[in-house]
Length: 65
Image: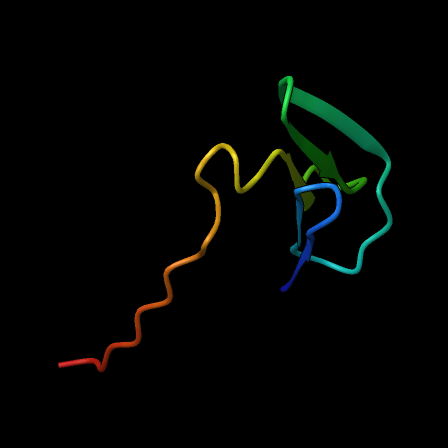
């Protein structure tokens, strides 16, 4: 998985797979999901990410009990 934030556009791109994108779907005006041939998600794009509260990301680390 690779996450890229473009500050100048306030766009967050979350790349889940290296598979080629064959289909894209808009969930709403600012969230777009791309899919591979097998139906798995390849990429999620969030427009106005910081403005809509998707950033900053909170990272928590834990240990298995």
